[in-house]
Structures are given as structure tokens and as C-alpha cells.
Image (cartoon, rainbow, N blue to C red; front, top):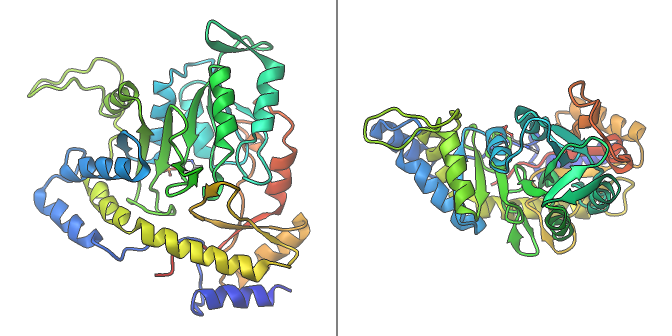
Length: 379
Ligand SMILES: *Cc1c(COP(=O)(O)O)cnc(C)c1O
């Protein structure tokens, strides 16, 4: 049924007999910097590559401070902790996301609250957020309170799904007027911009991931971005076991975490970042190929939202219904073309199914119809 689509995807990837969803590309200085890192003996959490990476990613994204971490989940956890998220708090997020977003909220002892996503951006819907805040909360002494539970609505974590930016202007202004901390889960969105500003720059903090399937990778890694020096200092302190800086003494002034990125991972990542612009350009060309091929077909190819530049991390199709989508999943995967549905919604997972949900019609609609198709850089 989808023979022509399978042939097209195979031709885009020069006839390979197995085409993964997204594989990393190591075509630059990766081995050189890794060797240098090993020779230096500084392979762990102290080292020149970690600091160099923090400078380079700050320059690339246009933020003032970057804190490199062992993975994206730990960066999210730090972002929530420095926002003051405490046990009993509520944190607004979307149900269509990777489980890490909710897990990090849980690590703080807080509860996710699910608002719907937007069908155009695939990310947190400003309309649904506004409705939640208007109907369920009031502001008292610069704190947003859920009037039904009495709990503080401390933060909001929009996620830029597959690299497509959420409607950040409205989300930002809602968070500001309701005194809710804004933390962007930009784990999938390195290189994506909203009105020319890099994602992760709209909130108090933004978070990136460098897991093996992301647009650039350090094996495992993450990063917290912020323009607020106090938040950066606090996050760095918490990520390094809250050790008080001293020439030889081991003194810690609170319970900290061992979350700092090792130098070995940073060496790989510094090399990867050098090629990011080439990767982005190749991914944009790939997205244009797909857009051309799928135009006029029943399944819709997802393109970047207005006023946005997406990184096209994972390309996506939306099918008219779930039955057709499932046929496509079966046919492509049995012909060596890897495709995947979106995540099962977070409000359906056993540990989050008791959480408060707004009307989630769009999220469910997308979860039933969406498929990711091969998106690796082809260089
Ligand atoms: C990848 C990802 C993360 C972080 O994942 P790590 O594997 O911990 O780096 C967080 N949120 C989303 C939406 C992600 O896709």
C-alpha cells in the first residue's frame, strides 16, 4: 500500500536496506578531541572540554550562562530545583512528551498538571494554558495558587516537540502575569528558533539534551541555559555535590547531586557542535524533499510553525486516522525503514494517570495519527 513511500525514503538514503530513525554522525574532530582528552588524563568532571563546551553552547544559543550535565533529565531536574519547585507543588506541562519531562517534576516531589498541545506546533497550547490558569488559579503575593487543591502552581514546562517551537510569546506572557516560572524543555530543539531567538531563551532556564538520538550527541549529556547568574551558579553548585570551592577541604553546604558532564563526553560534544550548522542545513534539505513528496498525499508532513525556524530533528507525518497510520508503521518497519509512533501520552502512564488533566483532545488526536520517519543527517 505504501510501496512508493518506502521506495522514496530508500532513495533519499541512497538505497540502504536498513534505515534507522536517527543515527549520530561523527565526521569532524571527535576522535582527535577524545584522544587529546584521554592523553590529558582529565576524563572526569573536571576538565577543559567541559568549560569550552559551556562557552561554545552559550555563544551558539545566545545565552549568558550554560551548565553542562550528565544528561538532559538531570538538567531538567536542576532547572526545576533552582526555580524553587518543592514537594506538593504543581508543575504545568504537556501530555505529549518524553517521560523525562514528568520524571524530573516527580524528582522534586511535585505533580505534573497536563494542559493540551497545539495541533500546529505539536507543543504546549497557549489557549489550554490560559484556560487552565483562568479557571483554576489565583495569584496571591506573587504566587500562583490552584484554588481547588490549595497547592502552588510553581512552574510551567513547555516542550518543543521534535524541534518545532511552541508559541513562546503567549506562553511567556501568561507565565509572567500569573507568576509561574517558565522552564523550556528544549531537549529536542537545539538549533530551533522562535522569532529569531533560540529556544530555551524565553524562560528562566532552558534545557538541552545530547543523548545519542538527539541532533548532536555526547553519548549522554545535557545542559541548562540561562541569562540569570544566580540561577546558573546555584545549578552548577547543586550539580557538583554542593561542594564548597576550596583547595583541599571537602565541605558541602547542602545535599547536592553528581550531575556534572564528564570531560570525555564534553570532548565528543565540542567536536559535534562544530558541525551543527552543517547538520541543520542537511536536515532542512531533507525536510524539503519530504515536503515535496508528501504534498497532495493523504498523510500530512509536519512543517515548522510560522515565525519559527525548526531544526527538523525528527520528521513527522500525520495520518487521517489511526488504522491507516498503523498499516504504515507495519509496512515500513517490515521493509527496513524504521518509523515510530509518538510517545504514549503521559496521562496514560501508571505513575501519572492520577494527575489533573485539561481537555486533551489535540494530544490524543495527534498520538493516534502521528508517525516519525527517518531523519538522520545524510552527509
Ligand atoms: C531527550 C529528552 C530529554 C532528556 O533526555 P536524556 O536522555 O536524559 O538526555 C528530556 N525531554 C525530552 C522531551 C527529550 O526528548
